[in-house]
Image (tube, rainbow, N blue to C red; front, side):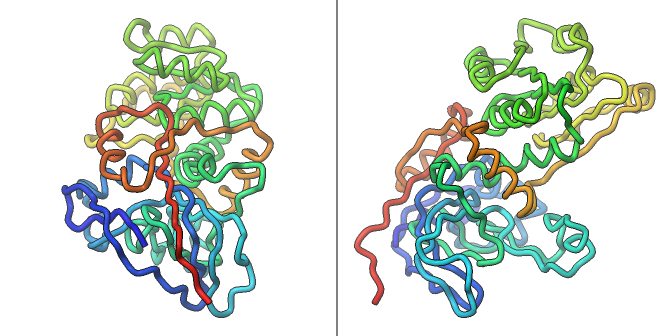
Length: 346
């Protein structure tokens, strides 16, 4: 099969012919239709996440936003079955027995295995996944559209859940990119008044197209002044990896509100203890989501309330796609589309 392989850190991925993997007990082989290109893939490829670098296998097939159909199943797999539409998320496997798994927080499992980091991911024509951890993709959701929901979508969905977002609240989303445009739609679907904040007019146009009630250009306007004129935000969700965005975001949270941390700047984010205490402001963080979160988001997407703005590129453009992500030359999300052909088994 064809796959985009990362051989060493800080080098472009290269297209290779590699063997089609065989599913072991409890596993399924998935024919990849689409795989989202996540900014995390770029961090992994460049080796600049010190926490994950030691556990990243090399050579590696990147990709943790994988959507496709089940091709074959291993021993003891009763569900899913061949032909089923499924997704493979960041969380490849969790133990199910530790205190975090038992508490419904499997993304914190100390024994977890990560797709496209510790095991090969979806920048390929086929991928192996644990049958217990694949995500069902509803018929109403296209596979290319579903792929980014497996990381970008579920990350902001989980962040809004963790922030206890409810109908009638004001939610400000800082950064209307791959995650931000989905956050706008999810918050809107959950009954919020949504404010989109960005530095580019094209991104603010996207926010309005996704249902934002208000938009703020952080270059020509003062977000604090504009958002506080509306009464302040009950929740400010930051998807931008900008230190400046966080500094501005905290000032937009109303008293008793919540700052939701999703974007990860390379340097520490500025937080005023005085502002936190005086306003009794909470800070919450979200790292992807559980299988339950994934199922809830897919159900929401099936209603048409959430649609990922995406651009499809062929699998052999993987290196160019990662370069575009690095330049910030993407509106919405890039998706690599694989076309496995001529591969058959008896």
